[in-house]
Length: 629
Ligand code: CUV
Ligand code: SF4
Picture 1 (cartoon, rainbow, N blue to C red):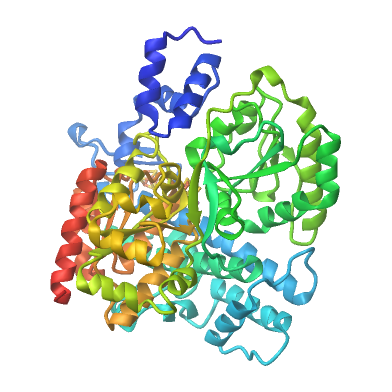
Picture 2 (picture 1 turned 180 degrees about the vertical axis):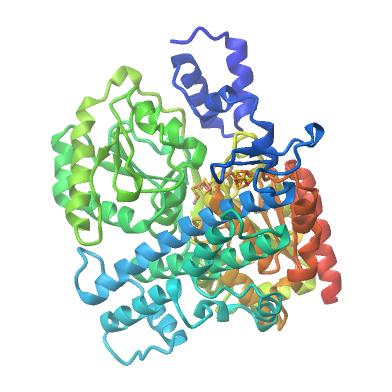
């Protein structure tokens, strides 16, 4: 029990989040002394000013070095100046993100290959139509059994990682004008892994020495993620588990059910979570749940795994990144199953205050204090059963007095793949293009990314989305941004009343929400496909469209890669939190200005979402003017 004064608790709660159920749960945590991300963020204050400006380097053992101009320390031991140190650190961050997405993409492509070989455990092909369509893009013969096509397509996808062709096949999906810009700028990715490896080479001491040369390679690495690794992740997930179609569900901490076994699925790769769903729905597990005193098994999503399950199966979501600890604090969570990315290493510590079991499953992400059940496509069915059984048997260990379910969930509609959007519009994107041309819809904005204690939880996402739809700008969202909108009630057709008259009219006619949930972070590739389709319909490059990107609460290296491939694809992108680059005015100028001359797009940084909305609206109106609409 903490002795914190109730007034202090109230103030902390109000400054931490706008999610109403999270507020109640944070209050509960503060009273019970359960540590959360916000407490740790306070413990880290003040943060290192050299690291936060990007002016420290610990790349080699001649260092670590810091640039402190006022003490005449202007170069590291190796001679690197501020611009180079900042650029190297940023390229390192971006590359880590591209690697994370792409490694996820590779794992799922390997699963498709095992399916093609008939060696996987329990996986099948759910979307044959998509399989055949993509096979044709790769010139793979399709007059054969799906499984044979899957085998060859998996090999073609896996080839993209280390291909010696010198270019990625999927980049051909970009409009000609966009592709030409990449060629001209020398940033056409030659292979997904190749650009990542080369980036790591370039950050080695004594290789990259010019900040701009380093950062242009960052764009190439990021394009290999967006149009390569992430796009493969999305496409193969659709082939194996189904292409999403509009689906209704529920969101926020209120999805926890007191009388059922509650299992959250947290992390990123649907190859694990889809098998858990199969196992949990089986009669054997349902009977076991009853035998243990529960009325059923309640599967709940978190973060991007949650987005994947929501999009394809309508599974309810407990929330986004900063809801991960709070869901444990409900005391009614029997197990949390994780794979990788965005999983707080401290979760077993949080869970140790309760009966909750954290079950880790990936060789790449073993977590001290968690139960470990190794999961692979070869043992998927068996591992999923073991995991679900562990959760079910844990139900009886709950401590009833410690259960705290803070309220009721909010309705959402998700599942807006590009295919689903096209279908909703009657089979082509022409009605959307017409609405944009007539000005009923002014433009579209992709809002993506995470939560970050530097921005009030969900405030950045929700405020920006509301402001944009009010100005007749359609929002398409992924990741934790989409979940923030869901909890705030923006992901339902009823939210149309918050939109301007033009957007409201279109949404009502088509029956869609003004904010469209397009999936997980790797599904930012769906946004690229949508942009390419819109640009091709108009016969222009992506950079000419009245569109923008935003990451109002980003924190992760993956988000740096996403932002970079948005910009490299021609999309003006506004970041909320400032990247750690303020130590180099030259790097700032390149990213927020100079890139315009290279890829016809640039970054902006604006933590205040209302000001970010102004920047975006101005940009969209300028693009409209240039198109003459
Ligand atoms: Ni992949 S990367 S916090 S879960 S969006 Fe959410 Fe999304 Fe950022 Fe992570
Ligand atoms: Fe210092 Fe250069 Fe080594 Fe970085 S690479 S730690 S700046 S000597």
